[in-house]
Image 1 (cartoon, one colour):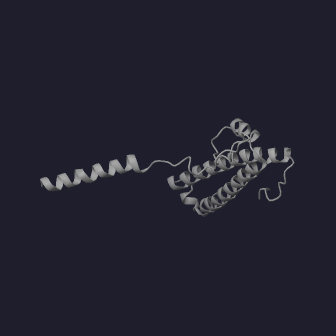
Image 2 (cartoon, rainbow, N blue to C red):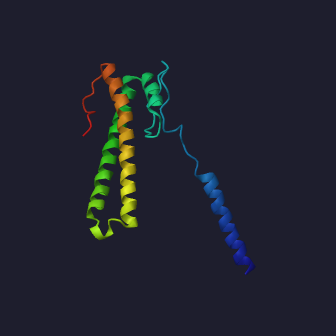
Length: 145
């Protein structure tokens, strides 16, 4: 009995330590270094970042970084649109008798959240797209479906 309790406590302690120590985010390893001219590198895609902050970042970016970031946003937008289509199809498949049930409500809320995220991604994409056009860069391949 005593051995079992000690074994359980040891396992719990090990799990807590692994969770506290082993799940560290690696933020700086994924990003390339900034250029020597003071330009910032392409930021990570974030739909919750304020548009004014995105505009300020875009002002300091090179054409290459602007294009890379716009492509990342385009890919995220396409993926989000696919998720919305799948979820919308699930909502349409719900029978009328279950349309007011909890599952249907949850799916509809999820769909609204996805649509909100999609709009935010499009707004941020547009900042980079407009900055590329302003700099006279080639925006071929950056049009959204």
